[in-house]
Amino acid sequence: MESPQSDPEPGWYCVRTKPKSEHLAARNLMGFANLDEVFCPRIRYEKSTRRGNVWFVEALFPGYIFARFDLTNDLRAVNAATGVLGILRFSDEYPQIEHAYIQELKDEFPEEEGAIRIIEPEISEGDDVIITEGALKGLETVVTRLVSGQDRVRVLIEWLGEEREAEVSLKSLNRPGEIRTEIRPSNP
Image (cartoon, rainbow, N blue to C red; front, side, top):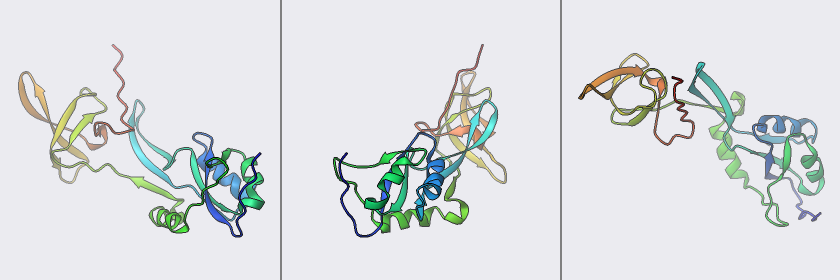
């Protein structure tokens, strides 16, 4: 095994984790490896599923978290923590992340809120969208109007050879190409 470069002070490193286990690896690094600072920024978003609208929480950087430690003294403990696959490295080099970059992320993801940021869909008039539930599921359309005071929008659909407006729930819309767009064909 290669010997890590020696650093006189603790620094921030990118730690690879098992899939969907970022928050568990962060907790294990705090407990088992006895690190003072571990940062796992996460996002919370609502998604339409077959069960209805469900809130999901996932890591902002899937498979990665950030930890501050002394590479020379803590490398073995960090690598041995449950949920950790290793520290990001290039050949024999373990790149340190500037404290300023981590601080910028921490400012965007306050720890008093559990380092979780809620992502609300922002849809406005003229946006191309895909309907993700109901009778119009899978239809690509355009938002024509936001319905004030409600969680609904009007979209343009073609019905019997004419263009008409239909009102749908804002939560049943996604933008084309969104990572979380999930359209499954209905069973006949």
